[in-house]
Length: 285
Image 1 (cartoon, rainbow, N blue to C red):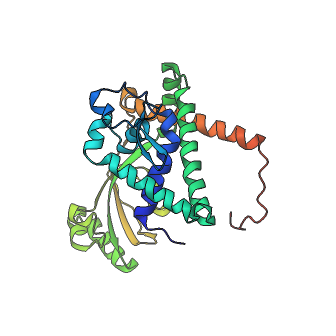
Image 2 (image 1 turned 45 degrees about the horizontal axis):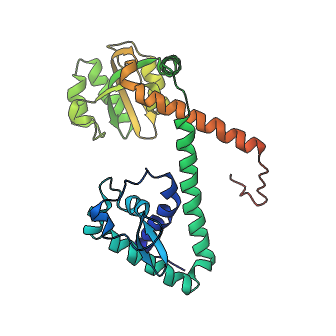
């Protein structure tokens, strides 16, 4: 069975609305306008009955994503959309579509994703992250960032012989940038005289990084350097310590790191206590 994307979206929204209704904000007290659409039931939060099945203000808020009075949502057709969805849902049930195996799998995945998300939100909401925690994490991250960055130029050609000829021209006093503009096949740097900007060794292929790190600022490789891209002549312009962001500039990221770590630790605890069996795990996993 294949569901159209729109159908999947509508089913997901309707199902999610039912699941999160209990977690929605408290419904406002009814007023004159909303009373006009309240049916004759004991539930004052019911805004419509569809073959006896209630649609509540909480459903309306959840579906519309509005914080306004539900009468506004009813006015722009949101209530009518929910009524239509409920009619379609009921007919689908009448036809037994809710018992279809693939439908049950889809609904289970929707429920699983939603409940897992709600639990992760609950875990992070209950965390007590202090400034000391953030500063300690900041120091850990900074320590991992510490290192040296390099600013270099290069000339990239396809053949070693051409690289050696250009190296000879450099030895005779030719300008590195001019040779790069004229001969380099690296489209990203040739027009800038071979300028690569600042980079860390990890950002480059090993052969290039090793040759760059071995240079002193203002010097050029004495031999062409081969990589999978071709043959390089490399000139190191300058080095610097890796810049470190200010604490306040990355505060939000630090909170996310600590929240993610808390969730991961919680998940590891669940895994340790769980009975997990994977009898047919693929060999490459």
